[in-house]
Structures are given as C-alpha cells and as structure tokens.
Image 1: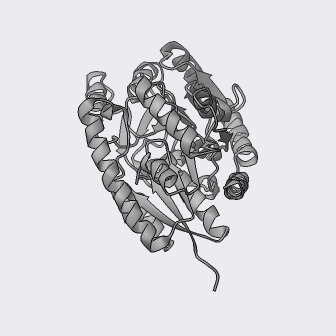
Image 2: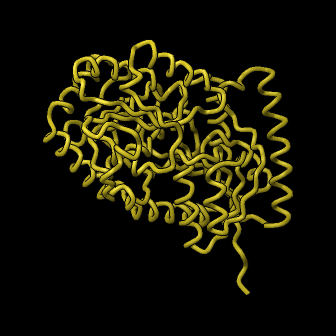
Image 3: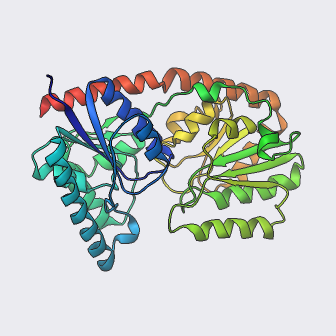
Length: 386
C-alpha cells in the first residue's frame, strides 16, 4: 500500500478574499499530484465549508497571526503565547499525520516556518504582502524567510522586488495568481435589478475588504464629484471590515450621509455572488491607497469584461495594460481619477473596448492552467532540493 503523503497547510484568513481563493487552487494542485492536504485555519469562516465539501481535513486553531498592531511589548507577548500554543497544536497533528511538507499562506503566518525548521521539514512560504514597515517586523519576517524557505513564492514582481532586497539566501519566485474564470464569463441579465441598482444607471463599483489600505473613502470622494456631474451614475461598495477596522465602515456610512450620497451609493457588505456583482457593474475601480500585492479581484473584473481603474500601489500595474484594458492612477489622485472615470462614463464604446481587451488578456496571460503548472513545478523542485 503506497504511503500517504501528508502536507500541512496554514492559512491566515478563513474568508473568501484574495489569499483564501488562491489557497483553494493550490490545494487542488497538491491533490492532483497525489498529496493529502491537512489545513489549519486560524478561525472559522467561509473557506471551512469549501474544504469540508472536498473532504479535506480542516482544523481550527488560533495561529497567532502577526500584524502591525502587535508590534509593541504587550502585543508581542500576546503573539508569543498564541504562537506557542499553535506550535504545540501542530506538533500534536504531526504525531497523527507525519507531515512531509509545510505550506504557509501569507507572511502573517509565522509559526509554520519556525515549526518546520525545528522539525527539519521543507517549508514553502507563499507571500501575498508588501510591508513597508514597521522596520522590526520587516526585519523579523525577512530573517525567518531566509532561514526557513529556500525558494518562497511571491504573487507579483512588486512583492518579490520588495522582499528580495532584505534576503541573503532565499531566492523568490514570482507566480502570478490564476483562478477559474468560468463564472465570470456568464451572462446575468437581471443583475442590477436583483442587487437593487437602478437598471438605467452607469454602475461604478469596488470590491475589497474594508481596511486602511483599500481606499473606500477615496472611492466615495470620487463618487461625490462624479455624481454631481453625471446624474446617471450609481456607485457600489462590496466588502466587510477586517476585524478591528469596523470604525472605517462607520466612517464610510457617515461620509455617504454627509455628502448626500444616500441614493447614489449602494453598500452591499460581504457577498459570495461576486460574478453577479461584477455583471451589474459598467466600470470596476480598485482605489487602494497602500501597497496592494496582486489583487485577485482585478483578474475577476477583467474576466467579466469590465474596464478597470486602479491605483499604482503594487501588482495592479502587472495586470492592467494602461490605456488598453483600463487606467492606472497614483493613490488618492482625485483629479486624475475623476478625469479617467469621466472618459469611461461618457464613452460606452471605450468601456466595451477596454473590457473585451481585459477579458482576452486575463484568459491568455493569467490562466488557471498556467498557475497550476507553475505551482506543480515549484512543488517538485522544492522537494527534490530537500
């Protein structure tokens, strides 16, 4: 009887945003290659249901996710204790499964790198973040990368360029995300009506987790100016707050009231029916104001044939072809943002042209097949070297 080849996957978030969607694709690649994934989530969430449907063993354990807010004496003590408990939990799982490899998804998960090193197991780190600071956190993570992972994966060249300069030994490989696009190619003729968006409107929307970097307030400022000039526009916000950032949502709702945008903006919260949401839009905006590594939602919007307006904060420039599939602006450049969106509002032919070009680009250059092939190759090369 062949030996079961168990791989431990550690996931920093249980929600179906970017990194969560990508880990599902990685898991399927490993299964196709004959490995048995065992997943530890830091908390319950939407991903858990998907894993259980696919009969992937899933465990819930606080993994002591490392974030900026913990870079202080009290926070570091808290993280040390959580990571110590997570380390012990993984050790107990290892007694049951005898892991052959550890895969940590996002740099926020640090316990896997340390545990794998102590247990002399190969470790793969999938980097989704660009982290400008604080300096002690960047230094800590760089040191752990160098010690634990010979060839980390980065989701974009922007991410790789950011981290490679801090590393002495590890050599980062860029593997652009790829996802199944079938749902985004579908036609949803009643999408606006079903989502409560005026059917005759030009709908401009953004999708993203509510946090300080995604730029929801910048989006609303563009909406204020554009709604005065173009009464036929309607604006759509999708996404819920990352825990601890609920005040940003409060600020969003206050701004909608203060700027008299109540009838012009729809806040839909978290949605699982993203293909339908995108179908309801005429223009997609990702107004990130802090580094955004490789926002998968742009790939989804391109697959849905939507023209893109995004900010030059990271991986978006690797997806959006300037002037061909959309426009790239500087973060919080209100004047340029309004100007470029005005072109798209006024010119339906331009919207259609950029949208179709975006769909062709994403299907040819960011395909799921290409992603799977590169993940598979990286896996076997990593095991051969270890």
